[in-house]
Image (cartoon, rainbow, N blue to C red):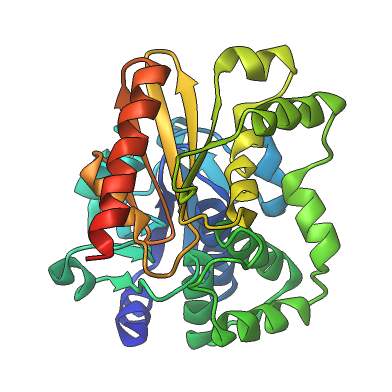
Length: 327
């Protein structure tokens, strides 16, 4: 894999790095860190995303390497030698417009840690044993001889911090922490890095999380727990949907818990996020059975219907899948 990355980089001069639409910190941090590293060795690299960078991530981009597709089209490369897609191995996930860049690229390379077919994995930089795409990118940056600067390290640290829910997922390894140590050697400080990405919250955030958690429920076996929220709740407390992503992790401390769920209604659809609290339970497979996907410990799907019906049907199916895993 490392040699594959080196060969691609060696042959390419004009490099575009993108990530999935509505990106999280792992996608953003990974692409920014990789772009800064490639620029440091003389490559003409830029990050092009479907939409402009969210304000909450701009501190991770001190060199302004991230632009939107529309901005890129104002002054496109004459040739794209290499298009790198970070934190997904599905082209439809990078956005309708950004996909068009693939047609003008000499080479395409996925850098990711999500499950994929073996055939795809064999010709791309995909390693599902990595705790985050940021960990994989950190290793690739080291392999091409680039030393971590503080901006590169902060982007990678933040990517790994968020995608592991503060290092609590089972894919976090000793090697993950060895990389974290190298990143901290550049001056990255965990308290500040945590506060920067999570932001300073308003009182509305506290009231929202209080309302959501006070309605938490479990099924009879207490192996499945869930919380629900909708747009009205978020608006009432003057919060943002981005603030709710970590709510589900509060359920993981419950006794007997195997699968934690969060149902968030958005218009006529409901996003079901799932987390596994048991190494033997694969929520990625469960999410696939419900039309979505993800990791064995973190996954999601989007379902159509009323919140009440979706909660009832989903919890019943999840419990059946848990029972089936015991056979």
